[in-house]
Length: 350
Image (tube, rainbow, N blue to C red; front, side):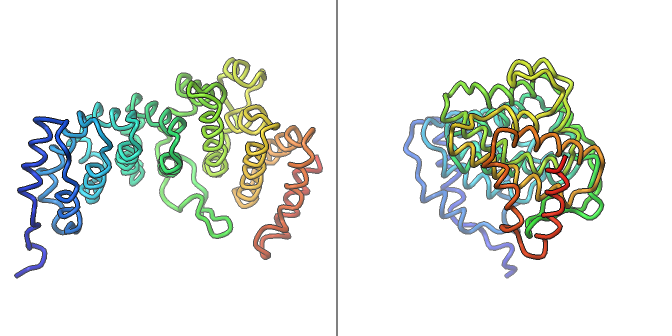
């Protein structure tokens, strides 16, 4: 007997349980039924189960009042073989937004796993770029979820989406200290970049969550940390998009500066309270990552001039940051230390 056709046991019982939960969302969920099926799943036997189980799980998730971790775990497994557009035919935008807005981290991660599928092709990323409500709900939850795992998942998904959508590409990919920053692949359409950095409402949303978060200062610090960690990667992909903005009035509103510097300038120069020791350490990490990556990113005079002015402004009254940048080559891999030292000298001796 072909092993691929061995039936998954317990599916009928699980289907019945899901039907009962749809009828009465307050029923006690039976985790064992879910676990028993999930443990048997393989790439070969998942496809026929998708139409049987996924619509029912989606229906339960819409109204289930308790922690949906067990439901989300099985849903993620079932989504494995599907691409972004296939999932959109099974789960509505409304269901995705509900999962993004959910207080349950498992639901947020399920929704972000769906969005992550759009990072598999430039065409799918372009489709996602048109779904404005999904984008704003995703960015809001990325910067608002208190759970570390939701923040990390959001950062990875956003970075991967903007990577595949980027319409300018480093010719050979980029990696720093063994970490891949940009993978060699054909250019994307740039629609997601335009949605996030050139849409006034979306840009306003990001700046507001990082300067006056409605959930208070603790969440504001988390949001700032998440933005600082992703920006060096985004700057390697599209330097101009993160160092220039048309929305000078938003810079005046949130950063108290009338410049057309982009989100990189906002994060590096205006966003954080340097009296907060932890945030100041985050800022130092940000500059170290930014400089390390820009050293190997394609050269342009505009890039060097922008970095010189950015570092000069940031270190003007911050000797701790300046010392950290100067000693960065001592903390990098030996074979890159000399070139990094030269690059730092070039940027600091302006």
